Length: 51
Image 1: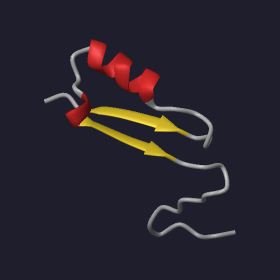
Image 2: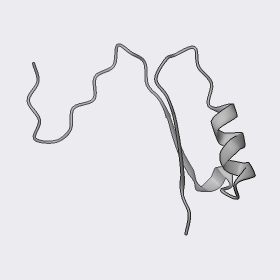
Image 3: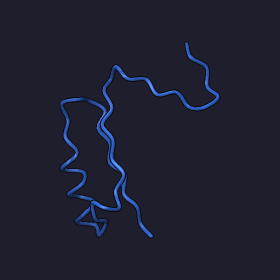
Image 4: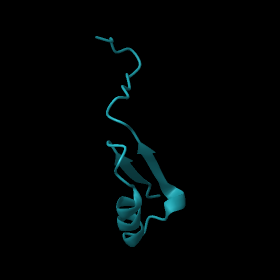
């Protein structure tokens, strides 16, 4: 099983070009995880310390 992953780090960016490229390589959008994250958002991994 192949799973795709697309991510944008800036709010002005779009995922479409990444999703289209994954689709061309045989990974349909239904099997792709995608996320948009703004530069002001912080994601902390479990167990990590905030500074």
